[in-house]
Every structure is written in structure tokens, then in C-alpha cells.
Amino acid sequence: MFKTLILSSFFFLSLSQAHARVDMRWFTVAAVVIEDEKTQIMFDPMFTRANLWHWLNFSKLKSDQALVSSVLKDHELNKLNAIFVSHSHFDHSIDAPMVAQLTGATFYVDPSTKIIAEAYKNPGIKTQEVENLKSIQVGNFKITVMKRTHAHIRTLGINFLKGPVSKDFDFNFYDYQMGDTWFYLIEHPEGKILLDQGSEPFSTTVQNFTDKVDVVIQGVANRPSDEATSEGYVKQFSPKIFIPTHFDNFIFSFDPKGSFSYLPGVRLDDVVARLKKDHPDKKIIVPEYGKRIQLFP
Image 1 (tube, rainbow, N blue to C red):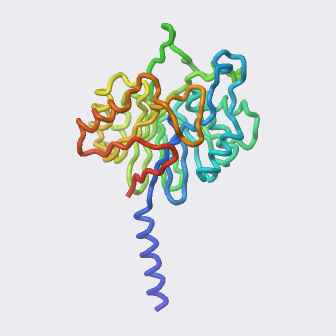
Image 2: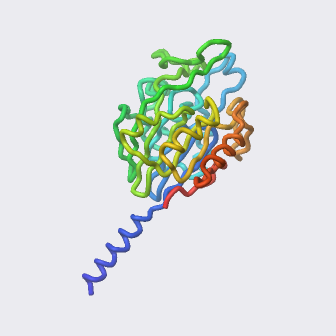
Image 3: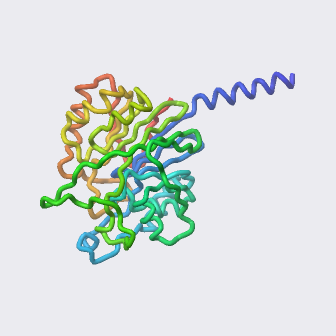
């Protein structure tokens, strides 16, 4: 009888593990949390906004600790295990060190984001350097880090905020240079997720690791065309779900309740309409602030 109970316990335990739920939540811009029942991983945390004084370089641009703490508490994000960023522009990296400090999560950094983290001079910010095409195990998630190039951001004919973060980084708006740019293949026993905040697909790199993914989460802010999005990862890796990000206006204000306006020129409705027309068998989900999207099973 005792043996039967033990075997039954193992059976039901393995059954529950085989059907672990995996969710995604979006917190404006490129900020995404992917989580199962035990592990939370955050990408590109950005709640702090730059105001006019920052753009004019009259004020330091640092993470707003009170705001970050409030968002983490309101959305139960205080048990994060890992933080990754796509690159070191402020709209991707600004709050990563503070989230690491407040939660104890490890901030996975490259040389540029490491400089930003170290500028806070807080020993509570744990960092670990990433290596291109190497995988990191976080709970049941395996995250493969892949390098890519960033699309040009041109302002008055100038390639805006390019190059690595300087070693004398001092929290000025224009100190948040691009640095290296990354995207991620996230593998879980329940399925595979491709997260790329870049608008142009880097499919050849991904094909070295997999020929199919279940979910694509992709930024659409600086895409060359709607066709490029439709003909990119969605066509090549045939995901069941496509989720656009980085479509909202991150200039000057953040609403903790989640209201936002669209980034000029994004035309998200056009992107979604094109994807639905070209891929009627796929689920195209526009995320809502802080709301769970069930990815698996």
C-alpha cells in the first residue's frame, strides 16, 4: 500500500510538471516578463521616463526607485530570478540595475550594461556577463543569448546614440549609447519562445539552434515595412502566437495604470492587419499592460 502511494505521488508530480503553465506579461515599451510557476525572467525593464530636462542634458537620468518599487509590488514582480536587456539605450536598460537591486535577481550584462550597473555603486546589484551564442539556465528556462545589429536611428542625418557606453558614464541622457545588441531564444519544457526587440529578423542565427518556435515576441518600432515583419520570423519559424512590442510612445510620461499612446509612425493596426491577412492560422495578440498572456500549454 505504501509503495502504491509513493508511485502514485511520483506519477501526479511528473504529470503536473509536464503541464506547467508559462505566461507572458508586458509592461510598456519592450518590458516583458516570462514566467512559469516557479521562475520569473524580465527583459528590458523600463518604467522611468526621460523628461525635457534630461533631453536637454540639464538633469541626470537615473532609475526612479520609488516608481520601480511600486510597479514591482503592484504586479508581484519581487521574485524575479533574472534580468536581460536588448541593448543599453535608456528605453531598454534604464531600470534594469534598480530591478536587480530591489529583487535580488541576476542582471545578465554585456560590457556596456555592466558599466551602467556599476555606476550605481550598489553591491546589491548582482551581474553576470553574457557570451554570444551561449545558453544560461534559469529554473526550467534555457536562454540562448544571440548577438545582432541594431537598425540605424537617424536624427538630422546623424546615427543617433551608436557605439559602446563610455567608461566615464555619468547618467546623462546621451551617455546611454547603444552598446551590443542582443536577442534571445527561450526554451522551456513546454515550448520555445523567440524574443527579439529588433525589427529586422536575424533568422540565420536562430536556425543554428532550431527550425521552429512556438511563440515570437518582436519589437515593431523601427521596422523597415509591415512586409518585413510578416515575411520574417512568422513565416520562417511558423509560431502559433505572435506578440508585438515596442509600439507605444515612451517619451516624457509613464502611467502606472497602463494607458499609453502609440509611438509616432508605428501604425500598429496596419502591422496586425497584415499579419492576420498573411497568416490566418496564427494567433496575433496585442499585449495589454500587466495582463497575463498564457503561452503554454
